[in-house]
Length: 178
Image (cartoon, rainbow, N blue to C red):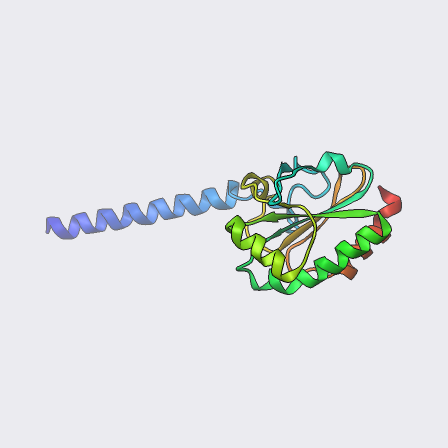
């Protein structure tokens, strides 16, 4: 009888712990906004600094006065691979117009694999391998892209594959507002 009684107590305790955890999760567990956007949208861009895969220093504050697109990606991510040609096209537009720049942030991927990916697939923008950046932007999966206005305000977030056209559209339609 003692075995059955202990089993009931342990089961009740486990159920109680799960219920308390769920209550805590629903009450306090998410900082996501109701619209699903990261808390950084509408705020000043987090600090984006570090050493690029090429060994150069990058600081987003040096781009103040122009648009910056911050793209989080990984070479093992199918949608990231799919959007890469779009990023190449956007980077070309940005270079041609001088209105924007693109910076990529590696998400859980070895730097040598990323360097090989860029050598094979093109792309000549700064690539940072800074593990703190996904946390600062609240990125939990890739691809994820943020558009930063010349003022330093994060104005748009994309949580899926993006196109060059969508990025250019955000810049052109938001330009007068920032």
